[in-house]
Length: 329
Image (tube, one colour):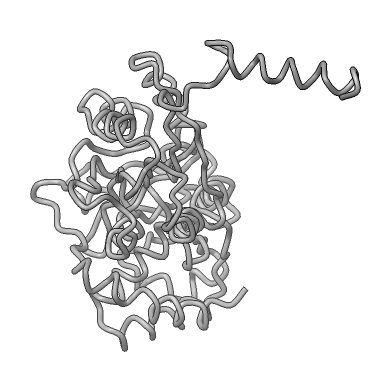
């Protein structure tokens, strides 16, 4: 063997044999994460400090959200690479459970909740809070004198006053897709399709992700948006003139989920992260950060959509096909 070849090979072999020079894979967890990176990373760093277990992460994209990770988990089902999935909505977690992606016993759990909300820019839209039991307030600084009344139900978004003024994420992905599919079940096919077609005809701003929806409303480029509560909180914290409208029976509560992959490469470490994310003190930190609205998966006394999840999972294909036909970009 030539000396120039021998030396680097010897160094490499020595590195493999020396204790401490190799990464201990038993101290690692691979996590696919749909929760927003800004919220997830500080908590995972805390998990590592507490347990010594390093978490290698794969995050989704804002445009396709959980659908991209779900497709990846399905593709890897016969040779799992991930140990844990941390989701930020329920439908895809249930879909993967139905296809045997999670371990057989205690495969997944839900914790905390966000919600799907209508959000308005108060410079352009007026909300009469007195109808909700609050004292009426004067117009905010910078508000137009001809502000229009806020919509009170999703059907109102098809009215002419909102033409070109409604923002929503492209409804084939993420929580927007889940919400639309849940409404399809709640209203029935005919009413739902008529609403979808009327909404599409009203020229909504279809964007890549719920955070973009909240930002468009914050800037006044849209007057009303259909988005997630955490994205509304984010722009409110920046001082945007936006208000989330009260939850109605057409709203959807969205828990976080955590699941352990069937055949996970690091099952013991995966179980530790699975349990850790559900701890009350961890969920409380997500609530404090604005990632979640509450620690429970429901709100006592509040009526919102309650899908038949098994039927909803079975209907994902036909519902998604209709949405793709109606909301053309």
